[in-house]
Amino acid sequence: MPFFVEPNFDTQISALEGCYSDENPIRYPEISAGEYLLSRFAATYEYREKFE
Image (cartoon, rainbow, N blue to C red; front, side):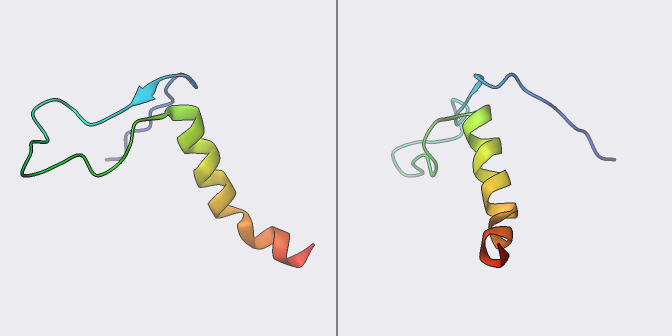
């Protein structure tokens, strides 16, 4: 069942405590929800720039 969430643009997204350690470091840097969404939109619609 899909579950959609629309976080506040300024909400910070980061790894949860306990989900990383010295042996298993954090894979991705902290980012705001807005920055992430804008990056995904840019990647999704990147092809349009090639045809304009």
